[in-house]
Structures are given as structure tokens and as C-alpha cells.
Length: 260
Image 1 (tube, rainbow, N blue to C red):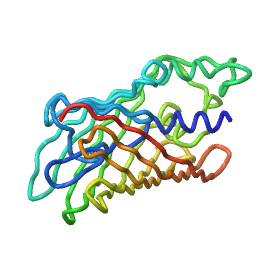
Image 2 (cartoon, rainbow, N blue to C red; image 1 turned 60 degrees about the horizontal axis):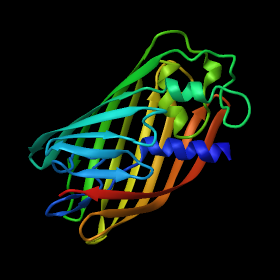
Image 3 (cartoon, rainbow, N blue to C red; image 1 turned 90 degrees about the vertical axis):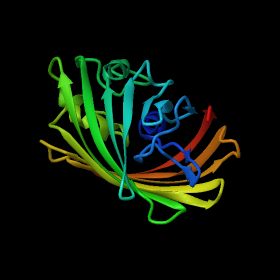
């Protein structure tokens, strides 16, 4: 039960969203170089929520997780050049509250209470390039780097060896972390779309240095884009301290849209 619970929590961190890039097609713009329109809200049940500050700048965070494991991102669009849309994404991640909460004995305890969790945060930067290979699809490539800042030592025995969570916390135990991946999405009919992506995490300074996640979902968007329903899977592979492991997780989400 604990593993299922925290796999779901981890999926909150890395969920993808489904949106519109008018007038050509519906897109999941989170994970691409496209931005949601100005003053539009997208509120996810299990994924990060987003707000369009302008047509080239958006802010994202997860309301349900914000007070346990705050993560805020800003994505800036840099325009289109020869058919390639460019953007950068910058974020800050603060896991200390969450790790201190689960450093307990009994139910919900994932870390021994004997260990001290210092104040720490991570800074991430990512570059995204999107291209339309044909009208009904969008292909995106991304690459990024994450650095950790710690105000005290962190014992390696405090790792949380769960899929989705472990690769995003590994940077606090090692050197900088690189991520690289591709994202391919489109639609079958105007309101029924699909997404397939692969994300790779390469962690410096450790033998447990490689993790990969493959996600596939189908998504239905209502006619006025006020509701999206997503369902699919996430397949995870990782080199954990206990050895290589595979995990297959379900993906299900509801996203509510407000504004244009």
C-alpha cells in the first residue's frame, strides 16, 4: 500500500498535461515548447496546474503537493524559427518537508527517524525544441540539467527507493543530474489524442546513474476545452541501490480548463 501511495505521489511530480494550440490541433503543451494562452488556468487532479502569465510565459505548480514537496516551474517561449518552436523551462524544487514527514516509524515511514534531513533545494533548467512532422502530430526533444543546494550533510541511507521519486531525489545525494528525452503526441480525431514519451535521467557521481521512464496515454478533451480525461501507463526502469528494477504504473488524470 505504501508503495502504491508514493508512486501516485511521484506521478504528481512528473505528470503531463493536455491543452490546445489553436487553430491547428489539441496538444499536451506541458513537455513541449508551446505555452498555454494568456490568463488560462489548467487545474490537474494528479498533475501540476498551470497558468498563462502571457502567451509566452507560464507558471506551473502542484496545489495538492505544494505544502509537502513544493515545486514551481516557469516556461518561457522564445518563438519559432524555420518551423522549430523554442522554449526554456526553469524550476525550483524543495523536498525537505516531505522527507522529514516520512522520516518516522510505523505507517507512512520511508526513512528512519535517526537521520537528520537538512534544508535543501534543487534548481533545474531545460531547453525544449518542438516541430510538427505532420499536421496531426507534434515532436519535441528536450535536454536539461539539475543542481542541488544543501545546507548540511545528507546520509545516503535516507534514499526513498521508489519509482518516479528516486530519480528526482537522487541529485541531492550525488552530483548534477542530466535529463534528455523525446515527446511525440497528436490526435486520432479532433478531441481524442495520444502521447508517447521517453525520458532519461543520467546522474553523475554514482554507479546507480541511469533511470528511464516511458509514458503512453490517451486523452479526451471536451469541445470547449473545459475538461480533459487521460488514461494510460508509465513504465519505469532504474539502477537502484538494491539493483536494476522495472515498474509498470497506471496513469489516470482529470484536468479542468478555465479561460481561453
